[in-house]
Image (cartoon, rainbow, N blue to C red; front, side):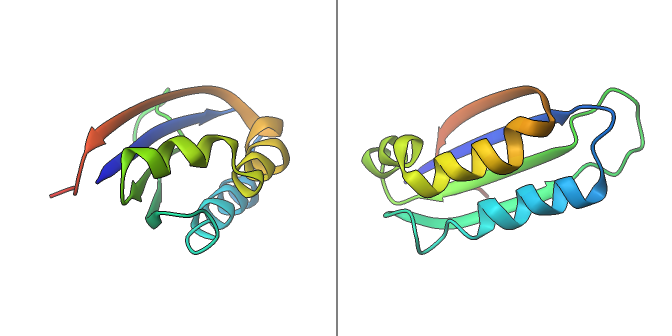
Length: 100
């Protein structure tokens, strides 16, 4: 099991609707991308300036499935249509799962 985790910082002009669109797009990949078992997306509470806007954990049945996710057309569409227009910066890690 491989878990792909990321933090996305969005441009200052981004809105709640932008964050919700990203969340909805990532969650909709479950059942579409082979081997993607679960998508957890959470918004920052806004308690401290400078935090990322959202964090996500995408759980895959294998490293091979995670590798396929990167080029999957549905994933690429989420990036191009929902994330890239409002993205300021990003950071990712991949870990052995499952999350505790």
